[in-house]
Length: 293
Length: 316
Image (tube, rainbow over all chains, first blue to last red; front, side):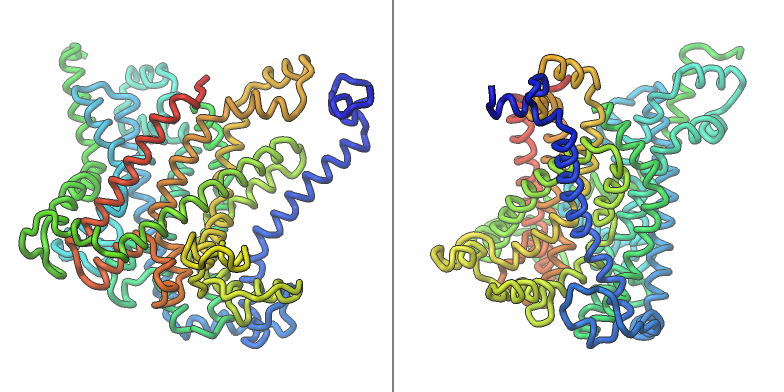
């Protein structure tokens, strides 16, 4: 009667699981684990942020106490004097912004075509696009570098932007979202004389808003966070993006830990803010994709 | 509406479809599809920072004779073996715990995903400072707890050698420096696994839980007999994605490697090998050969995995 089996069995009257105290204990255990992990996840961010206000001496003294005793606000100004981060940011936002806009437009058009239109050769074209998802990035790196150089786009914005202006994953995501748009919408719009473009603008795009925001979020993050391609395709400060700028700065700044942390904070901040704004739609979308399997 | 026959309709759609697909194909064909063939072609030619003479399979031959190539292949595999299981198991456990609580679920989900969206380079800078042998936090903690301090990212000796106190020779297994990069990567990406697992768990019908409870199933039984089988497609998806990602990993290696050092080659994976051979030394043909090798390696692994998974993955 008094066995482990009974203690843990829901139906047994002796079950520990029925005791409020045990449930309370179990719950606090779960929350402690989550809380501990939350601290581990957020600690490097907090440290980075507060170290950006520290003096060099304080930043290089190891301690679990993250707060600064002499807040050095001027670090945030000095870092822009050490390296042209203003220019880097301009480049990064320009490139990531344009890539995002073009990817969204391309994915809406292509996703709509594959979800709604019927035409000869559709399965083949769709298969070609999906096959590009399998192409490992490293295998096209060198040919793309040579192609960009031949086109005269080495160290230009075009070289940074054009290769990333379409991707299969975004097209697939938008297509899946269009698939659940009821057929009636489309038919009644056609009867009313609505063309493809006006149908897209007024009916379809608002309908796929979560998918579109997810695509925009990830395209922007990927473009803004990418390192390898900008590293090989840009040559000087004029076209350098923040990720490359930060690695170069980490070499130059070397021991100036506090300034390095200021720079890292400034680089990390935009993506975190954009993510926090867009996360609601992204999580909605993640559930919907999950439902489809 | 006079000419709106079936034939006309089809033709009209084909035309507008091609117009709307044109911009996507304009990018995908020259930058994703053709380069695949071009890369293979390049790998058969010699030359430095240029396309030189036709050399056949010599570049592959050089690669297979090059100890640096084998070293970086080993590093790539060790890295995948450390990061993929750790990320997925941690991600699954956390997602499971999150699915069991009612309050704070959304908060934790948002929080755990933050590292994943943040620039690898920016957070790697923080970790580099934490790993610093003189002023880093890790040595501070080890020292405070009375353990011997370590060289972390500068340590080429094996992590197993250090953990066993020298029983295993230092050249076996991944180096401590590589383990440090792996730990960083697990911290950086486990949030992705959490979100995907949570999405998977949320699709399990509530009735399954209810009927299992009525039959007297315990939480652990529900986990192993209901949740796990229903989540096998999610596992397969995550294993595939994370494996490919870890084999192609570049940013964390580049940002965490001590400048120039690469810790005696123990933190140079195939991507860094390709990068340095192609970009720093200018061996286009050799770089392409290694890239083709890595791509074939990844595709073969993915293929084997999908074949093998047929036996284990359960689709509803």
